[in-house]
Length: 172
Image: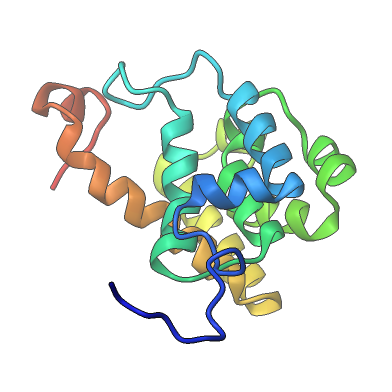
């Protein structure tokens, strides 16, 4: 049997899975519950996978792969698409989770839908990229949120059929 260092305490070791940390952190559990409820009934572009798996995946990359342990930052990973894709508003996020989480979520939210309708997609994408860059200058963690989101999306593309990719305008 392996003898662990005398000062090692398994009870004090950080959880290795996001789900285990969520179970220990009430703030993070609240973000999980809010995001899961907000995205209920939504699916990924494959039309089958529950959308909330994307939110979990982004937070999992941040925690399990990049070692980010701050519950507020991980909450942004879980909530990052709520303003863009659900009925939740920035004020809802701010009221429940505070200014830091609201700033993070708003920073990675796509250019506002009411303005985006007036722009062609390339212009809207450019405006969104400018916003993320500007917010990153205020707080570099914004780049981490966006990179985790993009990394998850890139890994997820393998599950999208060629027909769905064409329908959704995804080209390689």
